[in-house]
Length: 80
Image (cartoon, one colour):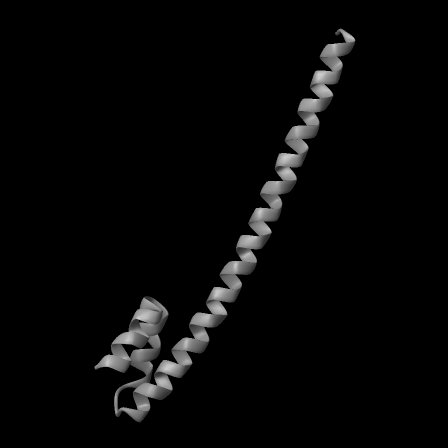
């Protein structure tokens, strides 16, 4: 293999290595993002359950609805 061919292979391997590192970093960041969103939804569900109880509605039902619908359930609970 010629010297330029070897250099090209080394450069290509380096680019693949950098791309793999970038993909791994994106995966780690995405997992952190999902963890933060999950905690936020759980806190919102607890708050919605408390609001529902104060409005004489089923707290458990509104907790589960918030887990499924997210902030849309909060909007529905507050408006109706």
